[in-house]
Length: 165
Image 1: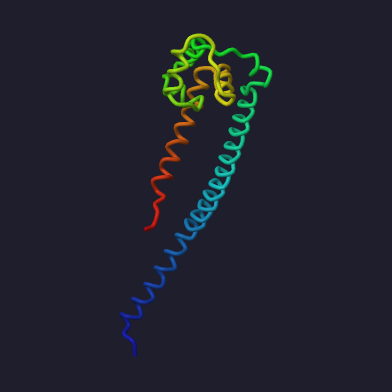
Image 2 (image 1 turned 180 degrees about the vertical axis):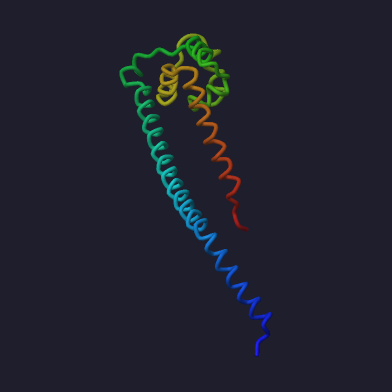
């Protein structure tokens, strides 16, 4: 025959568990609803960020299309050392930064600036200089920041790749 104390203790424990479950049932439902809501918000945020990136890319592409010089403009343009120097000063860039912007070496920019008279540039360089001529200082800075971030990302990827011996 079981001990009365043990039976009483077991019954008290059962009733306490039942009361605790009843008291926390609403909290459990609320917690589950909050988790679902959070997951939904995360999905919506991811979709909005993706849409934002796509729109930013589209704007960047359209902006670069408007900045890109036409063939006629390329033929007519006369690039001089004085123009290069004035452009770099207007964009508030160093020779190194200007070189990054137009995708040449800093030595090339120095050579362009110290040369007398008209400068004969390769087609790609001339297009980049003419494109830079249409930029404002803040646009040049933004594009330069993007170039620097890409360089850092590329450098990070190169360091992580190691050959197996």
